[in-house]
Image 1: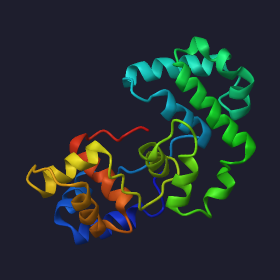
Image 2 (image 1 turned 30 degrees about the vertical axis):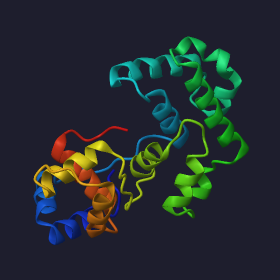
Image 3 (image 1 turned 120 degrees about the vertical axis):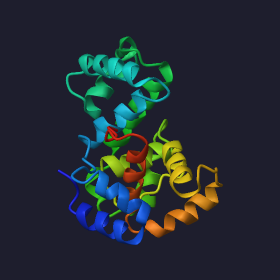
Image 4 (image 1 turned 180 degrees about the vertical axis):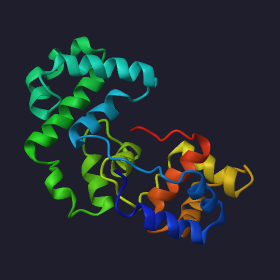
Length: 205
């Protein structure tokens, strides 16, 4: 199910921006879909860092098989040594266990997140070892379905902006940030459409 705001956001973006309007028309009927429960989504983002999609899928399958269920409790019960046979590096095992500890201790509590603005939630997420700003922003877009996240460090977003609005000429981070202001309060939606301009298949995060 796409977010409740999707139709309104798409219409407003299309009305205000001709290039965006072309993308909205081309990809009508598609949109963001939330990706599973928060802990599993974050754990999978750590597992998949700096390896290919195929390798990440393989390691994730072994990770699931090593646990009774994908939960903070199961991860801490297994511990770093219990996850050693999954194909995770020692550092990634440390990261996943740190993530689980944050959930168990309540330092990350999904019931609190609705009351937190984007920056507050990003700050909380990046306190976990192995979760940087980009990963947190992807989580806000794809799991929390936040409507106005603009992941400036995403290379795909940068490339799409350069190609569609600057004739392929690279621009500074500051210029891209200022350019993105035109899409408030729907920058997550604009980003999704810009990604589609590079790859028609919806991103699965």
